Image 1 (cartoon, rainbow, N blue to C red):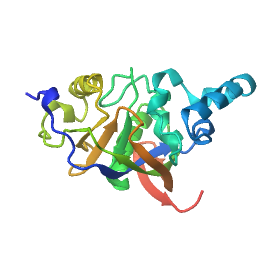
Image 2: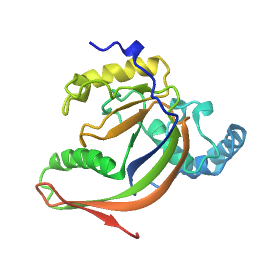
Image 3: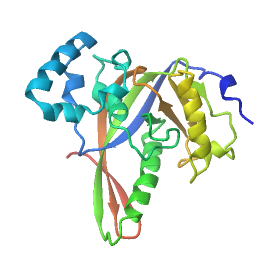
Image 4: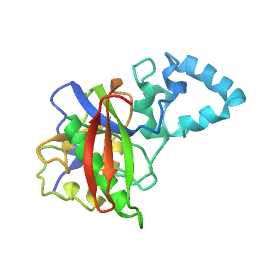
Length: 231
């Protein structure tokens, strides 16, 4: 049995990782146009009076502390979005009551993780004969200091169950409650690789666009995953 209070910390500080997001969601200018919390508050109040649509794009700001937002870092909005636009259905380490920024050690790992979830979604759409999703690749540099390391836990442990997230969500809730910044764990969809789940955007130093990819649904499965040089 794992004692979540006694997990070791990740043994290195800086990390480079990758993430994929649906390209239909643009960067949120409200976060990228300011350098610090004071500038943000001024711009936020101005936009609240003149551009309510932009505030809607920013999402539920009450879910993330201003002190946790990495203002001034490249791609700040990409780091913040998972915390202001929370998936109510949840994810592996969250029951949907809080956001997590998921990252992968390689773009191939990120593709494997996204493909699994996208395939499940499309398979649940009755009569869907064809579809295509365009994904924006992001390269993220962040600080792992203080994060808990779950990679020593056996792949057979329930937190790595391919279908049930129950055990992983218990772990996620305990670690978030302990106010750790994030966790490192084994990729479930790409065995042998590593993923991270950040409970706050604060550790992010930069998150910049890299390459676009597309996934094609042929009515039965994702039939192809293609790298796109330009969009």
